[in-house]
Image (cartoon, rainbow, N blue to C red; front, side, top):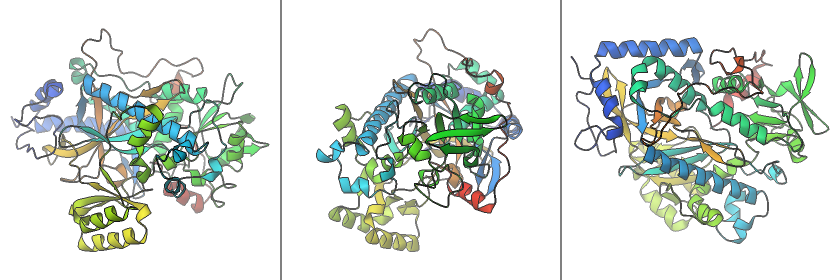
Length: 526
């Protein structure tokens, strides 16, 4: 019998499964024993079951214009109850502080008067939109959904890598990964008490309904997608289907007299809450890009008038700016009067002359990131960059230091990943998703673990060829009960059929020409 762990080599990175003596950590003991006893042939059969499941469900991701199954590695990431409690509290703390920051930035601006963050820095962000000033959400929530990217450093400490408060993607894969794993490794769920993730769509719907304009008892909620050519279209249709709401494109909506209506086969129907999955710049051709074929003319004025809620709110991207990220610990102290639970990765602000000069001398030792990019685009890892890349980077920083940040290279933690017929360490991160209903910030127990599939790579983004793992949060051993991981009981406003995993997505209809197709591909969210 061949041990799939044979030759598994630990390096200086923190390994999630193994300690320094190559013994499995306590949360992984049962999982390690099960996997150790599998032969290559048996594991290959499990992989074939996974592939059939994803293919049958149409679970795909668009990469370089090609639809392909979302890569799921069958070795789950396991998080103990006490570690998850820390993550949960830290993510909720961060979301609350950023919520207050956004309200302040588009309101009184007291954070500037207190000299916590420079006004110039915020106003120069490409994602700060003056058009959003005066748009006050009905229940005060701007960040209805967030994805906070975490890494674990060489010492085993969880750190925040970046914040995603615009249109964070990936939650559909969290739910579908769990569903696939329950089919591939049912015996593992019998030996592990894993907290469920399938309640997310119901939680999201509750938060969206709570965000409806005042006086609306039974709001109509829709999911606004750029269309079927968008890289994350599977997720858009998945969430609409699971929540039992309509999936619409911009052409399906019309705004007159600040009232948004949806065109249906029986006439127009008023819309109260729009969960949008397209970027600000494409949302309203009156306020932003006049050539946008994806948005709805007049939508922002309707939101300003309080007649419709846009989730997430317009202008949230200013809090995603990676230079603003470096100030979040100070924002937590200022708004909440608390010390940050989850620390940042140390970040160098290149607008400061001395700091910039030091960074320019050490470009080959640092990670450089554009402040307004997402999906791993524009990232330069100094130790892996060519001389030409470093020279171009130097010119870009000198020309516009506001557009870049630098960070020390952090060896992301590793996890056993199936590659070349055996388990090998691959670097991973974690994106927990949080839902804010105005009363509580709820964090999905698990989130999306992304894995860098090439050996030695630190780039985990799906858009850069990364994969994923199912993330298991173990229940507190003192807990007396645990609900099984199954789709939630449908609320009264949902039909039973809408919550079934195999329900067909709404027909998106044909596209209106190549210009619209290119726009869909261009803006894919975070």
